[in-house]
Amino acid sequence: MANEPRRQFLQKLGLFSATTLAGGISATTWGANLETALINAQSLSPDQLATEEDFWHYIQQSFTVSSGIINLNNGGVCPAPRTVQDAMKRYYDYSNEAPSYYMWRILDQGREPLRKRLAELAGCSKEEIAINRNSSEGLETVIFGLTLEKGDEIVAARQDYPNMVNAYKQREERDGIKMIWISLELPSEDEDYLVRQYVNAFTSRTKVVHITHVINWNGQIIPVKKIAEEAHRRGIKVIVDGAHSFAHFDFKIPDLGADYFATSLHKWLYAPIGSGMLYVKKEHIAPLYPLFAAGNPKEDNIRKFEALGTRPFFIEQAIGKALDFHELIGIERKMKRLHYLKNYWMKKVKDIPGVKLNTSLDARWGCAIGNVLIEGKTPASLDSYLLDKFKIHTVAIEWENIKGVRITPNVYTTTKELDVLVEGITQFAKEAKKA
Image (cartoon, rainbow, N blue to C red):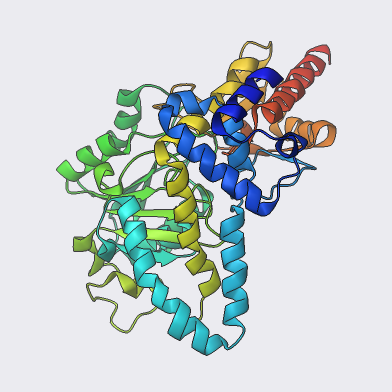
């Protein structure tokens, strides 16, 4: 936005002042301004708000991101907003006043209300939600906890996350199960193609299908519900890796048809680093063994998956503040903004000679995560160039048949920062063409 439209927007919100323009906003002021901006934004649709830079300026002020680097690798882990950071630090100090008392007798009492809130966001019963540390822990609880026999088959994709691939390989080596690996040609906007790759791999011996809801390498959204429907018709259980989908875009876990679902809350929910959630459909809890031994491993109680011993209660309880922040923005607003940011930079570079996009621009097949490759150059060379020349932090991806640099903006990312990214990609592509 130009300066005049910016002033008009700020005046509309009743926020315009010399102090605001100068950027000298105190902690209490940015909080008040954000609250006012949210109230006034109720008159705008999520689509309209997605492009309103001045509104998202106040969202940005909720974070403490570095001004010395443009962080476009939110695909690994997202920063937490100020309120979440403050809560975690406060709970940590609280715990250290008398650890065994304050952790187990005070902070631990907040787990059940937290479980209920997570279940409400997930759209399921609180008796189906376990709180843990990350997606890998949740998914490996399921992978290693399922009772499988020698010769039983599991269908999964070579593009799945390495921790899961290795977990299945370990079960294959130790227990004699048979892995059926499919390979996906991505990006794809062909639902039938994506569904067929999984369904065509099903046999009478298939017991489980593992589906990554959002392929972390390039942001491809997989049609989980359609695959799950086909799996259930054949009596096959469905494990969903939701590391990059939960709180990223709008859905409810039961609507996916998942029997098991795990996610990292420190990604798109902006919870403290080292927090995650496991969903197990009620009827599947009893037969699933916990990863960490529980008193009664066959009980029908979701809490048996939380037998971690001494745990970081200060991290766990700060998840509540992340839920507050998520609800404050609203999932539809957040989803529209994230998709807009991804498309903003991709549209500006897609016609540059030598640029190859590995992510769909269609909202049905991609949201915040994008992937770009410069033909004739390695992903690592573009990654290094962006960091060295423009102080942009991304990540080079080379996994199976997906090669490129993953670009992941977030709600605190500005279009001005993405303009710097576009400049960097443009210059790199020009230099690559000359070489």
